[in-house]
Amino acid sequence: MNQLVDGEWRTDAYESTDEEGAFQRGETTFRDWVGGSDVPEHVDAEPDDRFQPEAGRYHLYVSYACPWAHRTLLARSILGLEDVIDVSVVDPWRGADGWQFTPDKPGCTPDELHDSDYLRELYVAADPDATCRVTVPVLWDEREGTIVNNESREILRMLTTAFADLGNGASLLPDDPAGVSRVDEVITEIYEPVNNGVYRAGFATSQPAYDAAVDELFEALDRWDDHLAENRYLAGDEFTEADLCLFTTLVRFDHVYHTHFMCNRKFIHQYEHLWPYVRDLYATPGVAETVNLDHIKEHYYTTHPDVTPTGIIARGPDLDWEEPHDRDRLAGSPPAPETED
Ligand SMILES: N[C@@H](CCC(=O)N[C@@H](CS)C(=O)NCC(=O)O)C(=O)O
Image (cartoon, rainbow, N blue to C red; front, side):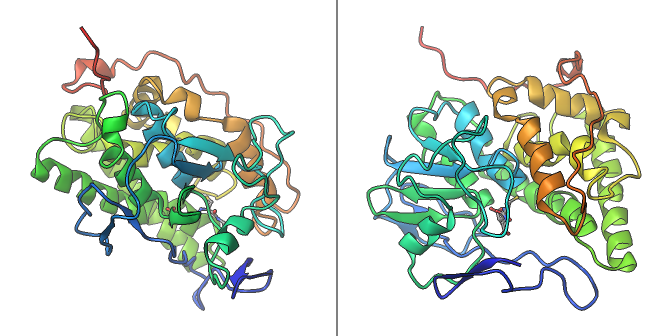
């Protein structure tokens, strides 16, 4: 697989599966923390006073296709941070040179800051000797000219805490520490079987590794479907970061994970509660405009020739994302921007 080694781009740098054929996701490398917010317990970082939350200073590099980058786009949109943090969008197709900027393609932008051709140029600008994968999302600091962080869960938390005061007053975290801990537990709980589970199924190179990933995935989906029978959201009564983390996998599921990654024991639209739940989240103000199904489908079907060698983009299924969800009968409410009166 492709990555930077000592600042040079290499196309044969690492194996993405272990000797048992199980997918191994590499660690991300830029892990600084914006000052002015608490570092969650699970994060090994100190707030860095060099990085203060400021409007117009930071930039997000994303792909609409990527579920991890989607977390950050969702928080930016729901919290009303569009004028605070600008965004550059890469081409959904990723070839041998890694993520690239193709501004002429619908939904894509140039690198708004540096006019680079490839995302890896930013990684090398941040660290000329970088040895790492070149991934999205990236939180870039224009003032320091470097990458602050490229781990979605951490960028998400910085947006919902350090940057929240610069937004519209909506919140994606409970007020009480116990509520925040519960959100953290749920995000951890869904990561391995669900968010990463679809990749473990799709990129497995042995039958046992694939079987284990699919079994864990559907066991977790069944469990959360039961939870959602009585609860509007995943962690308490509010729409939180945890819902947003599940959403980015569920919204892609029937279009790409089911077929391309062979997660085909069931579609999400066949679940009694998960399907209305994901439509409820989709109907939440700020969410629908972050979903680009064309980029999602193009990315997955054309970027992994080991998985779908023809690069043909599967047509279906036709889903009505705007069908009424009737979830407002359950306790809880979507994030609400503060209104001036
Ligand atoms: N742990 C990272 C994972 C990010 C990630 O793997 N992004 C994928 C896109 S979905 C990527 O950029 N892959 C490029 C590569 O691995 O070379 C996060 O959550 O931010």
